[in-house]
Image 1: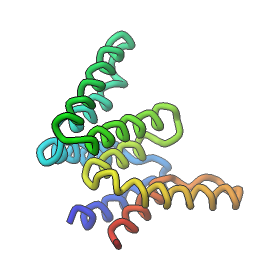
Image 2 (image 1 turned 30 degrees about the horizontal axis):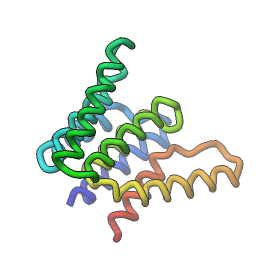
Image 3 (image 1 turned 90 degrees about the vertical axis):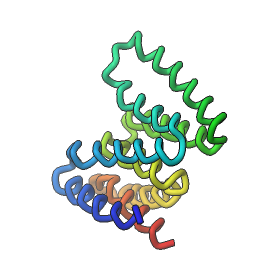
Image 4 (image 1 turned 45 degrees about the vertical axis):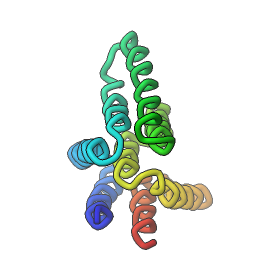
Length: 164
């Protein structure tokens, strides 16, 4: 059901990304917050709280980031203890997506969208999204053309996931 709502939303994000090379926060933040709330209510509240801490991490002074990192470690342990290893892996994946964004490997909107999709669909969504964006990157490399926003690969990956 969510896939039917996600595809038009992703198409709008992709169109905006192709047109302006940016995706406005009003298209990415509300769905991410909804994904956090939904995941916290239905699956694992520690993972949802961990996702929230990743959003606040950028706005904190350096000395508080270490404390927050400790809290995140505790949240991963609680997620493992209350919901199992899959929740802990999901939390680690969210941290990985956040790190890719912070190190400049993916854009902020891409990271927010992929985090939201991962919270809604689970880890299984990452395989088609990674394959689609990987193929997109390979085609761009072979053509030696300017980059195409990764949101297109994300849209195609979710489309492939929906067709299964």
